[in-house]
Length: 133
Image (cartoon, rainbow, N blue to C red; front, side):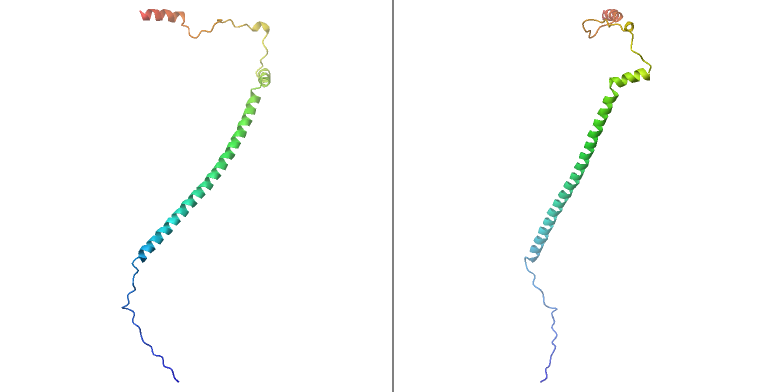
C-alpha cells in the first residue's frame, strides 16, 4: 500500500487573537510591584552601604582622637619639663649670668594695707572739679 500525503495550506492571516480584558492591567500591576520591590531593595542597599561608610569614618576619627590624646599628653609632659623651676634656675645662672640677690638688694613692698580699686590722680581731681562747674 502506498500512502499519500497531501498538503493543505492553512491561511491564518484572518485569525485575531482574543485580548484578555484584564491582562494588561495585571501586567502593569506586576511591573509596578517589581519596581516597588526593586526600589525597596535599592533603598536598603543604599542605607547599608552608607552605614558601612559611616563606620569606617568613625573608626578613622577614633584613631585620630587617640593620636591627639597621645600628642596632648606628650605636650603636657614637655610643658611640665620646661616649666620646672630647677631648669629655669639653671638657664638663668648659666646662659643669662644671673645670680641670687644679696640680702641688701631685696626690699619689702610697702603698699596700702587695703586694696584700692580705682583712685583718681590729684591732677585729675582738680580737672574733674573745675570741669563739673
